[in-house]
Image (cartoon, rainbow, N blue to C red; front, side):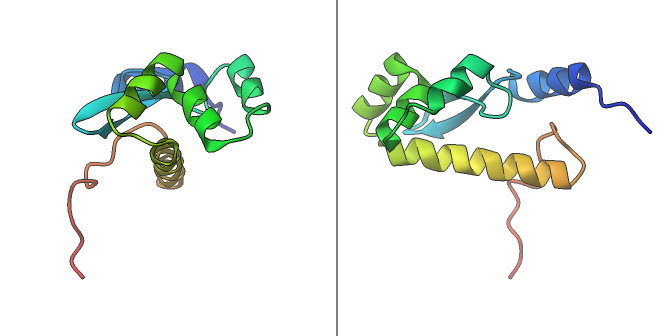
Length: 113
């Protein structure tokens, strides 16, 4: 039975994405950084339990100051939720493919239909 090395996984994530506990997305040609719901601190996760609206969730993920800038740039809470969903889908796919931290080399290529 092999041992799972969490230190190595976190180091790989940080190397691949720049952080072990955040992810980023682009909107209006600007990068926005969210907490990663998988690796975020337990206290941060506990804060999710008190949230009732998409706006509160988006602000929690981006942080109050960054969310304000995001809205000023034309962003909406739903866009943050979309980014979170895309991130989680990508993480599931990478895990299923046996690549829990590496970026996909084919993500920019279009499939032929």
